[in-house]
Length: 289
Ligand SMILES: Nc1ncnc2c1ncn2[C@@H]1O[C@H](COP(=O)(O)OP(=O)(O)OP(=O)(O)O)[C@@H](O)[C@H]1O
Ligand SMILES: [Mg+2]
Image (cartoon, rainbow, N blue to C red; front, top):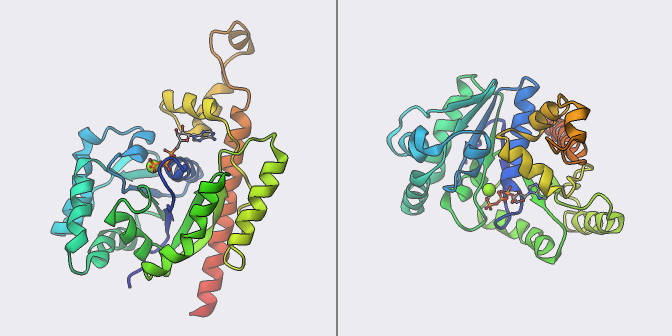
C-alpha cells in the first residue's frame, strides 16, 4: 500500500467532533511558523475550505481533486495564506467519493496526485480534513494511505465509545496509519475533574498505542465563533485583538472574549506537541528502515 509522505490525517469521529477545527487551526499555525502546508479538504461540506477563507464555488467546487484522481491531471491547489495552500472541496467531492466505491485500485489513484506533489518539494506537510466517519469513501482512502493520524475527541459517553471502535475501524481498512494521539477538545477549563476523568478514559482505551496529548483545548465556543465571523484563524484573530485599544474595549465598541488568548495559546502548544510527536515517529521509523 502507498503511503503519502508527511501526511497528517485528522479524522475518525462523528459530525461536530472538531475534526475541521483541529485540521484548520493547526494548518494555520504551522504555516505562520514557516512550514509549507497543504490543507486537503475531503469533505463535500467544504468546511475547511471555508475556514481558510476560500469560496468553493470560485475554486472548482471540488473539481480539482476529481480531475487529478480520475483523469491524472496535476492536482491544483489554491493559495489561502503565505505557506498555506488548499485542495478545495465541494459538490464534486461527493461525486468522486461515490466513484471510488467501485473503482479498482482506488487507494492508489487517490494517493498518487498527493505523492507527486510531495515529490515536487512544494510542501512540507499535507493535512487532510476528513468528513464524518463512515460517510465517505474518500475518508477510507485517506486512512489507508495517510502516514499519521490525529483524532479529536470531547468528553461524554458517545465520544469515548467512538474511540473504542477506532482500532476495529483501522483493522477493517487494513490501515497502517500511525496514531499520533488523541486531542481532547471542547472541555471546560474549570472542570478539573472532568478533564482528569476524560484523560484517564482516553489513556485506558489507547493503552500502549499512543498517549492523549498533554494540551487540552478548552470549551470556548464564543471565541471560536468570533474568529470565524472575522474570517481569521484563531491565532490571527488573537493577534488582531491584541491591537484593539483598551479604551475601545471598555467602551464596548469591540467585545473580545476573555478566554480568546488562552484558547489561541492552547492551539500553539498543541501544534508544538504534534510536531514533537511527528519528529519522534520519523526518528523511530528511520531506525526501523
Ligand atoms: N474550543 C471550542 N469550544 C466550543 N466549541 C467549539 C470550539 N472549537 C470549535 N467549536 C465548535 O464545534 C463545532 C464543530 O466543529 P467542526 O466543524 O470542527 O467539527 P467536525 O468534526 O469537522 O464536523 P463535521 O463532521 O461535520 O465535519 C463547531 O460548531 C464549532 O463552532
Ligand atoms: Mg468537518
